Image (tube, rainbow, N blue to C red; front, top):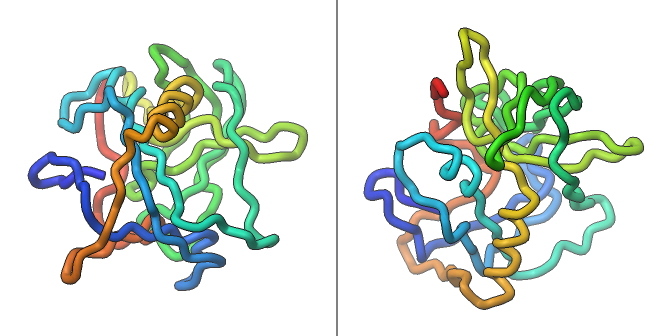
Length: 204
C-alpha cells in the first residue's frame, strides 16, 4: 500500500485479489474497492514494536465471493508462548502454489508482536500464521519479517486482535481510500508474487 521508492501511500491503482491462486489460475478474481491502512502505521525502515504491531491493512472487495469451493478463514485470539503454529505462504521458490512452510511454536508475545520459531523465507512477508482449533485452521497473525535472536532464526508477526478491530472501525467510519485504476497505471495483484519484496532481515 506504499510506494517503496517514495514511501508515500498508494491512493490510486488497480488491486486485484486472486482467491485460491494455484499454478497460474485462481478460484475467483475480485477487484478491491477500498483499502484502509492502520492509522498508526508509519512507513519507514526503523524497526520498532509499533511498526510491527501496526503493519496491517484491510481490503474490501468490490463484489463478494460466492463460491462454495472457497471458504474464508476465521481469525482467533493471539496464541500463548509454547503454542504450535504454522505458516502458509507463496514464498520465493513456490510462487505458484501455497504450501505449509513451517510448523513451529510461539516463543514470546510482547507489545502486540508475536515472536515465533518459524523460519520464513523471502516472499513470506504478509503470509498468514495459523493455529489449528478443533481441526480448523484459524489465522492468528501475519508475518512481518524474519529476524535473528542470539544466532537463532525467528519470525516476527503482527498480532491481529485489537489492530484488526481498529481497521474494521476505520472502514465503518468511512476513512478508507477508494481505489480507481486509470489507463496506463500499473496493475497490482494481491497474491501474485512477481517482485522481490519479501520478508526482511532484522536483528532485534
